[in-house]
Length: 518
Image (tube, rainbow, N blue to C red; front, top):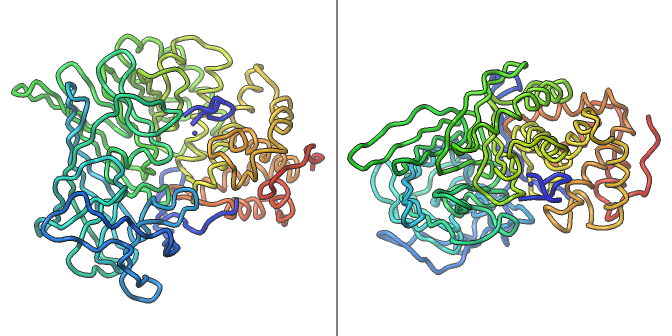
């Protein structure tokens, strides 16, 4: 996300906590090394309780988390409604490792709402008799599995599904949830995440970082649990639906004057990176980049021609960042232009989202900055996501630093100037980079990038970029922490970096001057 300030643009993108990624499937070249799964620990007791009053039920009432005093650690039943993230203690469930979401949505243009069905499939990490999904907006009408209806309750921001008996750790699950979600009539992406109405025409768009997806879909809404996705979105005649991954096709239903757009996201993706656009869109085949990546973009009909002005920039950026950070981590890339207010920029996986008002065909400093920032996120944030939201600087710091390097390469700024200004503006405020006072404040973006510049000066270019590539390779399709990043950079440099990380990353303030070049 760019902040305007996402990345030196803050728009709508510590003491590291324990949760780590549940699975890792690919190397940057697309090969399959096998699972490198590590289960997250049971969350702290205070983070795993739910409000007791249900809003919806079927058949019988499942127990709430606060009624379950036993834990998986004791070998008994777990009822987790948290992965233990300090900033978002109610997000995620440590009991689940979701493999796949199959989503079917029908858009009601008159009511500006969706009815939907989502099938959630995966494995239980802990023995449990309850399946908990984050559900901060949808109204659930039914839950089923292969055997029939399941009892459930909606309690605050949770959907608690009773399994009827204890499922052992390692066993599989597949539940289907029917629901309805309304699109709020107002609200800014600077104030909340989720679904938004188009500015000028019919339709909606979404920006979901950090917790927006669960405001319209029941999901395990934490970046430590990545999954593959399939979206089938039915829209009225004249509208289109855009999502992540490959467009499998569209089917028309003359009886209802509607069409269904089916998208397959077959590379694991964190829930906050989901893209959904509904409007008068066209897809554009941009061919292949010079590095061999398929380029597929989307914009509303009147804006499609604007995409052509960015083709050469995108190709040069792809080549440049591949040299620096290693093979582009996904099968395809493209741009999506939303009918939103200016300032939107979000690293939705494989197809970052921008405002049509910002990528309006003009090419200048601002457009170069936006495009560089969100492309860099494909390596830092999408391929490797934060283990906790305190680790967000590893997304935004890297994307901002990549943006600085690109602007210098294009002769639009200098890296030294950007770094000095950022250090001066963030060194003595905003808290530790690893535990910032504001999640999407300038300490996360400019402060994080300044820390990376200091690290580069400390260990030298070779070790710095070797470490950057190893970070992506080692944690592909996964989530990783600040401690993990330190370990990667120590291995790349052959140095103990405890003092550096204590001084630059974990301290409440940072030095006034950068270290001397190694």
